[in-house]
Length: 136
Image 1: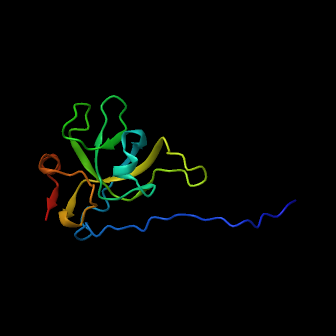
Image 2 (image 1 turned 30 degrees about the horizontal axis):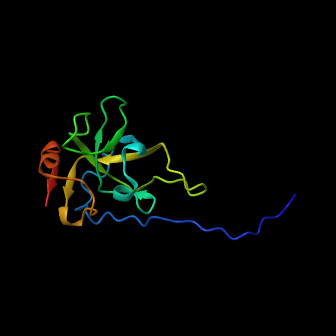
């Protein structure tokens, strides 16, 4: 048996749900699977994590979720919610981008738009797609 005492480092994402206004709706966060290939590293996960509050949509062909984009016609033009918790998009051991990642979507409650992540992707049409969210 050998002993490994090499120095290792890990990166963590501090969760920031300051965009949530209260706890209403946090018990209703359906599980989803994200297709990480649909997200752009520079835009969505520069630090290796897709932040909570990112607008997401269901990709028609695969049934997986990607970033909401009102200009597309692959299903992602209809906003399906906000990512409830940040998710790791990069393998910390290899540095490779992951393929699929589990997450949850926020679909009901109140949101402070000014506190969403800078690249959340939500727009007026996306807000209309989510009538159970009160946008403040």
